[in-house]
Length: 496
Image 1 (cartoon, rainbow, N blue to C red):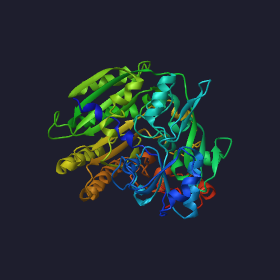
Image 2 (cartoon, rainbow, N blue to C red):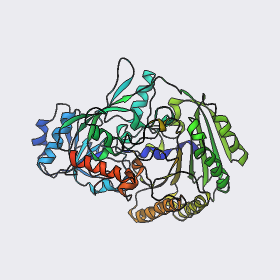
Image 3 (tube, rainbow, N blue to C red):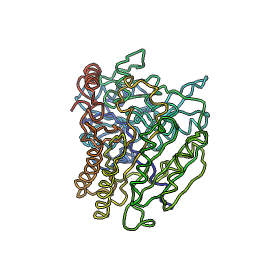
């Protein structure tokens, strides 16, 4: 069972932080260099660390760079943007390089604005909030929270950026306690497309603040945010991880519907998830279903909701109690885990569902089985199901931010994974799109709803940013005011 812990919630590592710029000017060091602060650095092709500085987690449709500017202050970001604008050059900011959307592939031979040195994390004396640099990783923030004995909504994967996933909404284990990541942003420092630096909050530049929280990759580069933190409510957690054969699919998902669709998801702090995957040790022929439940030990609803799954004859069960801080490692999302390693293709095709249609799931399972058996290179592909607690999410009025899908019950994502091979790309896209289409057809929904942090890139803007007409109208108005030339257009753009 050694592979069991390396796949849970793995797609959370695909969360993104990207805003962008391109340069054709070979004189960048001579002209831009003197305008930067002393700790900033320009890295060019041929420099020993250029390759590592431009390395990506996603090998498909990735951006390429003529130069990397390692920034340390908002003025460095501003000067780089001004330099690019003076030459009509696009730009791209990078935190941890986990963006996977294929629109990034349109950014070629440009200037990357690398934020990794802007990773300072500083708590206020009263312990009510923290300032987080735009280059901090999720692992950096989790480590700082642990040291300060604080909790807040974060991602699960330690190797992604922190601010980027928050700009796209930000699901996480403590969503049922503190809301989504986007709900915990107090204010933010933003470098706009013209190089100006502004603060945004509910009181200042509030339209930009609204747009930033859900569609932020389209509006600016974030040097830092102020973020809510809390006295810990959930330090000890119970976990149960089941492995089921594929013939138990209907039983497992009908019972999951009782949790996901029923009132339980609104009452409990529990997270449940599933992963379809190949595990030849358990089943050499067909994919198996990993189903996991995590909940704080203080959650009285957890044991009863877990009990019925034991009756379905699982292939194996692992259970125990664990510290909240060890959940990334348990779920295969620690910074040294396999999912954090670079050099693979990871195509994702997310869809939000309100319930599980077991007929559609069976069709998807058959498709998954066929593709992963016929194409051995797809052996590491998974289908990820995530259902987070909604017990605190409805407390936030759904119109308060640009994130549109607060009422969705489950997030399902095919993650097509393989060693880079251009001969397989079209097959992989067809595979992932087919799985998503089967799930969509079984959803009885009038519109596909997709999570922008996992987007493949073929989704229409309304499928990422909301199908109520007023949402895109409001986002377009914000673009006209703050980015009229659409300089921030490389990550899941609103305007195409």
